[in-house]
Length: 279
Ligand SMILES: NC(=O)c1ccc[n+]([C@@H]2O[C@H](COP(=O)([O-])OP(=O)(O)OC[C@H]3O[C@@H](n4cnc5c(N)ncnc54)[C@H](OP(=O)(O)O)[C@@H]3O)[C@@H](O)[C@H]2O)c1
Image 1 (tube, rainbow, N blue to C red):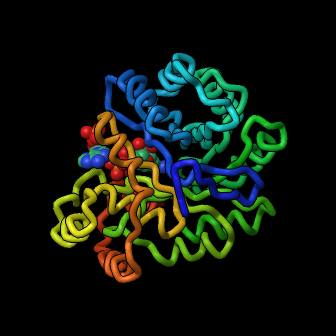
Image 2: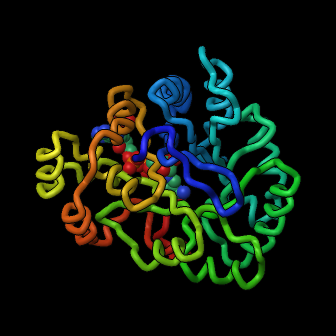
Image 3: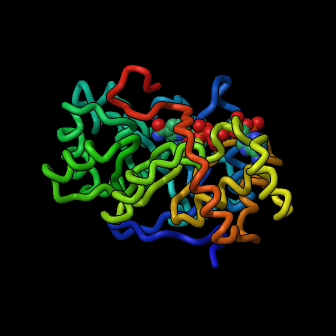
């Protein structure tokens, strides 16, 4: 039985919570301070940020101002290296700045935010060093397709611990998740509730109604039952609590199968990071 304290074992040996808290927001970015306090109160321990979100110092502040801070070992803090740092070979500097902003000695997971084909390998080798030095407990990637993962596999024996990708029933990339599962790469689902843009889908509302749960909870649960790690984001305390209340029900095999059939290639960020329309 899963609960909010459940963890997945990473191929690098660490343990990652099965549910996370996304922190991207439009300005004013200091709103994340309050949201993170609500999230930790609600039981989230995985916090997902990135240099490009420009909120790491607010997350650092939120962590330092917690009334009952969980032990550092219980928290799982992820940040990401943006493509500008990849391009100029500043991966180490990027992490050092993140750590300073976050007020931490290490992150639990460091990701390449999106692939930049000719720079991925150099970045990855620096990240291997950062992991060896203990500045990043695990290293992984985000927005990598099979072609990017294959190129990495040819150049390095370090398998990414995680691939963070957009994933919800309306954008279900089965081939990519099957590839990650086969290589013990944990799939982490961003935009797991499709930015709220499909919450009125009648099929989704019907499953939610039958279960006396909300559409958002059903989408998060679909991810959890597939064994992926969803990281919903919210600034609203009721939504933060609602999105964490997903461990007291189970979707049936038939409901999971039905939702697996809803793919319509609807995506928030884009399908292929090598294409110019990828945001
Ligand atoms: N690696 C990448 O390239 C990448 C890309 C995108 C996102 N991410 C990460 O993934 C996280 C989540 O993805 P996301 O922010 O794109 O989208 P999301 O979590 O699918 O959706 C967030 C939106 O849904 C609303 N919402 C949240 N819970 C709700 C609920 N229970 N009922 C109704 N509306 C609800 C939020 O508004 P309220 O604030 O009003 O609740 C917000 O507008 C990000 O914060 C970020 O950490 C990573």
